[in-house]
Length: 100
Picture 1 (cartoon, rainbow, N blue to C red):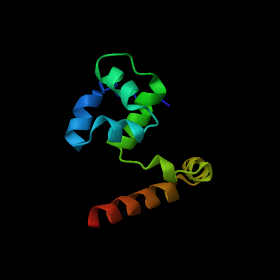
Picture 2: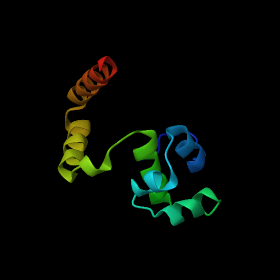
Picture 3: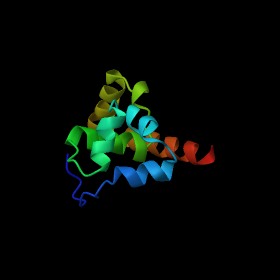
Picture 4: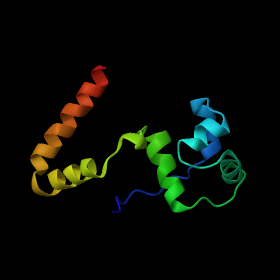
């Protein structure tokens, strides 16, 4: 699914430093070894799946350990068949997070 937005350049070292994590802490959350992460930080091309995991885990702050396939199925169902309910739930969840 394309949003039409230009893809931002992801600089993992900058994100890691901003989060105050060492390489092992940062990369292990994505299932990448410290040495593999070090190579990506040194300029080696990062595969698209790793880029997406980095975005989800460290930018969107999603705990991928807690995601279940059935959760994704519910979201997709709501988006397609109950878009008004999806928007309402999304708005409610966002306001709840802001209050916390």
